[in-house]
Figure: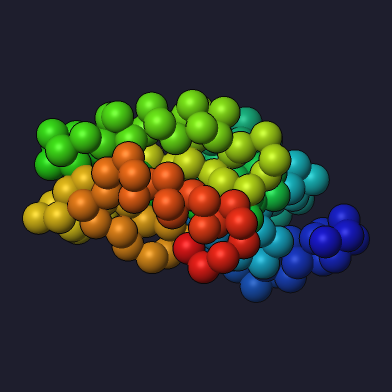
Length: 159
């Protein structure tokens, strides 16, 4: 997306919401939905519109892991780290993902294909360990099933 289009989306969101009390989170969500992430150029615009410092805006962006400051990966994998999933092998699945995709727990693979996002409950405790891949829940995931899911995604088949 061209930078001027991104900036126009940012300005449209700010115009719509800047007068709303406590609007920062909604503004960030709307910008991310429109652009795909929070561009660095948006931060001064947001700060100025809301009479906040750059540090305040950046602090909120970095505090919440769901906000991205770079374009999103093609696929998003959210791995549950809650107690039930941990007890059923989520830690080993996380290690498998980090090794196979060469990323950290909040990272994106070097090829930009997969982002890993840890979460602390997907509501599938009875079917642990669970993960969500591109919005689709997968339960009772083991090493083999994880490899199959990743292979399908990386080969551009349905995840």
